[in-house]
Length: 115
Length: 115
Image (tube, rainbow over all chains, first blue to last red; front, side):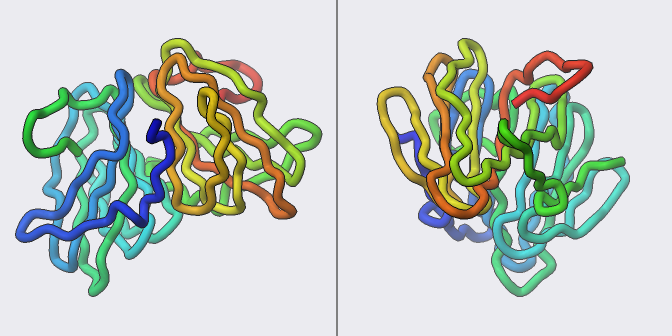
């Protein structure tokens, strides 16, 4: 039973779009990693019915939450509740690693991964 | 709008029961911190309808998930899906700091905090 995952073993890189992977996908919650190389971004978007968080694991991100833009580094939790637009970009030289979660989870896909 | 919280600014200590605090409480997800001093534990329990995770931020925890017991250190995500019993104890000399989340969130309480 895979109930334990070391985040550092699941990091990855992807071009041109940033890397996403799912760690756990339950009935009420999905957890994953987002890894953004320097210059990559997750465009601002909104989930009408899902609460979402990011926790910065490595690097620094420039987050947009609603009308606010703010930088955050390791150990900071960023909260994007239902209906609030959010996005993040990596303006730094090093990779940005984000632990993230979304509730309720997106529908499971056959190909690609949510996040 | 408080959408950014540095975990390290929200750590605490409590005796005899371990410290718990809520970071964010949404419609679909609750996020918090659990801080266990050496020798403290969160007894094994089950949430029938809630998915829950812990992320070890500092220290090492000895987790029980179902019939399995396993240690985990910083950067490891521990997953306790709906209906699976779980608990954690701190057998180490230093404080154990856990970032945790639960979906759907517990009912809001007037006193005390969920988690």
